[in-house]
Length: 95
Image 1 (cartoon, one colour):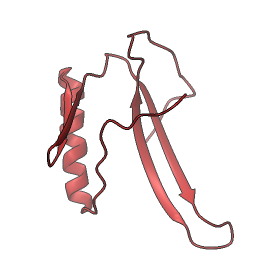
Image 2 (tube, helix red, strand yellow):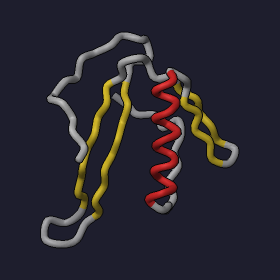
Image 3 (cartoon, rainbow, N blue to C red):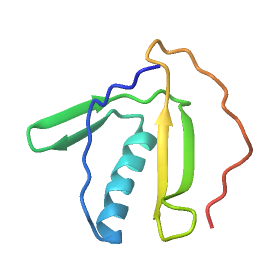
Image 4 (spheres, rainbow, N blue to C red):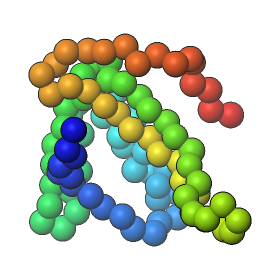
């Protein structure tokens, strides 16, 4: 399935700045509101359903025998047509 990027922003930020963005998204989700992403003249508004699929990944990219790039990715997924799928693979815990 082809992927269409609707919005992208990538900047170096402090942990505190990132936490602030994540808190704002969390507040929007908790209140059942749409999430609007803006950067310069670009913006997109998305309305996650009540039960989207929440995907969390920890990855390492790079050569097997050398230093690479580490990442933690948080992703909300849902069908545009509104159907809900169950993507359960165990309860997520963050310590």
